[in-house]
Image 1 (cartoon, rainbow, N blue to C red):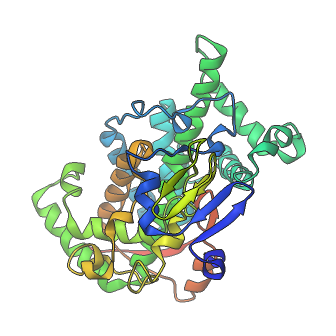
Image 2: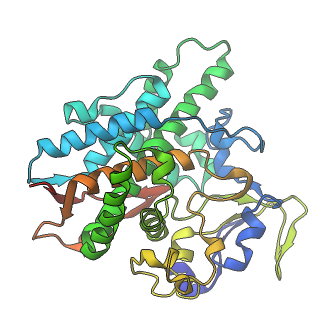
Length: 386
């Protein structure tokens, strides 16, 4: 964001790499008709070919996960109840939740973090591995060398070893490698992203009690009609979805955007010529907080997605899960978890910030680790039926 403020909408961030903060070029780069494909970062683990790295437009599918999401949401509520009215580190708790869901879906068994109230040792390895990937996202050519240095790559090696142990019966070595990295993709997309997104949403809700109260009214109305949560019904809740959308605008899952690479012959997009094989990124965090695109860009205003659309000049550039042929395959699962957790927690609890809470400390602790990374967030939960 600071680079774009200093140097304008198009900033050269590498020998053949551009960061583009121009909403008029967004669809030219990310739409279904775009000639841009996934950039060299996706080859970081060559010869691995995971779903995240696939450039074939037909290979992303979605499965139904609702019963297990509901199961772990119930376990999350029980864990909150066990803490009574004490301050709860929800960053840790939401990580436990998302890793348990991911473990069940990816490996057929939970990590049991919610049950045990303790972190699995490979959760930290996963987080460290993402920070490594971030560091080399602009230096892809150096990674084959660095990954052979054990002292610099211990977390990566340990995570790889553990993921390999989860996939023992694959027919070919290449299939085994690919499946291991499919598992790694699920670990990241199905846990880290979800946990951080839920944490940021609850930070904003606790910071804005009026908005939380309005959302609880909608949730209470929903539960008078449905005894148990169901995703089809939750997906129709206008204000719930507006709160989620607004939180994802302020804290997009991939703050710097995903790499795309142009055709070898180069191309024109708008008035700009992109030389051949140039890597481009559209930084979501910067674009969504740019006053040229959004009125009151740093304010949490869910109504900009409902009754006050004039606060967003072009909502079509809002795509926290990306758009087009390479959009996130886990989008619906992530939204399902966000809706289940938010509706269940706010249906049972009022949420508030501790008296000694410093909003600036939390905001400054939100980092770009390829995916968004949050610092610890402590909240107080009070039973609504008390």
